[in-house]
Image (cartoon, rainbow, N blue to C red; front, side, top):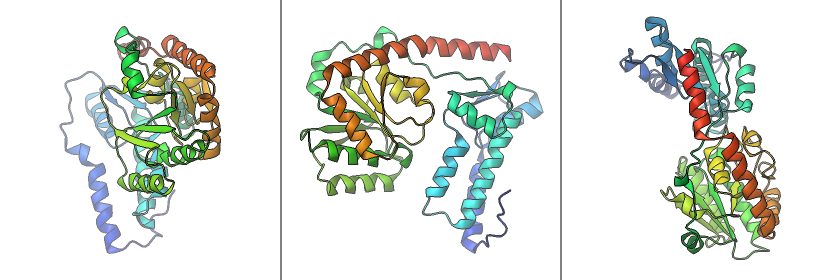
Length: 334
């Protein structure tokens, strides 16, 4: 057990303690009885309290799915925080741990989206008979076909790399930027397009300074959140993921569907998703990332082959219809 008492709190600590606790207990202010047959929480956090209450009072089944391992990710954020004091870090670790275990104990079914998550949940004490892996699925219908190649060619070239991810430390965009600086020595007109929201303003500012310091203003382009992301993809384009923590990322699944040649770390469930249809790189290693990107940029046939293999794997194994059928069967069984 984490000894919070031994960390002498200041008056500021106690004030922040009450603020944080009130935020975690905020879901209790909601209407607790829902006019539904099943309560499903997509994260093992404080919102799972509603599922626990509905199960205890009204006898309604409680389903919990985890796209990332909430406890593991929150511990990482707490450890990296420069704002939280020693007392608040220990308090948060204990509080989040208790919430997660509460969710696991009361859930009728726990749905990890990959085997990586399942192993963590088992390690944290989730019972095997509650666990059922249901992989994320993606719509593989004609509406996602990208046959407007002329439009795509205007936006991308084979010297472009696409990265889809929010600006926060888990995505390790810093490593991607440093890798571009290495690639630039051989491919001067290399461009890394980054798509996604800004979730950590300090980290975003740090990355902007890094781009400036490495003279990559014309090589690293941030596009934010766009509605027509598929129009930046083309057969044999290079897609990059430098994440240090993942569950079963939709960004890579979508890139597979669009026949991208993928360079990625092996974080979380990515190997289960990508299989042997991409190139893997070491985490937080710009040289490893640069080497893999250069290999693809200089080899068109390899890009095309990996893209088509990834597409076939996505369509055959991770369709939206298969995922929905799994959830339909689960709900009916409860």
